[in-house]
Image (cartoon, rainbow, N blue to C red; front, top):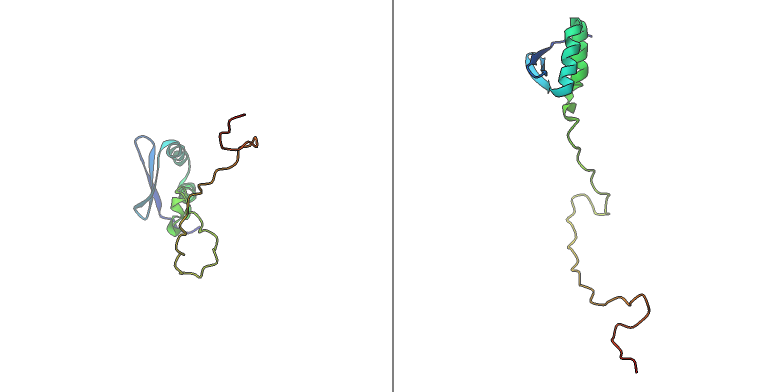
Length: 113
């Protein structure tokens, strides 16, 4: 690869700030920060650049927010033209009829004669 300009700073609590051309592009903490700090201490400068490239991914293209939830896909086309207004909602009338009992008896109270 060409000359990369990644840098890093390790802060207390194993927080690793990854820099690109002097600007912070990513901050790692917790287990990931601790693991990266350990690896960075063991390798030479070429391998450091490789590790930092790998950790940041393709940050210049906007995929650094992979962990955020994605938008829901739009609902399937309902046959309306693009940009057409939604149809008016239909007023619903409550159903006042009752279902017949499952045992077949009528709902009315009949006195046995």
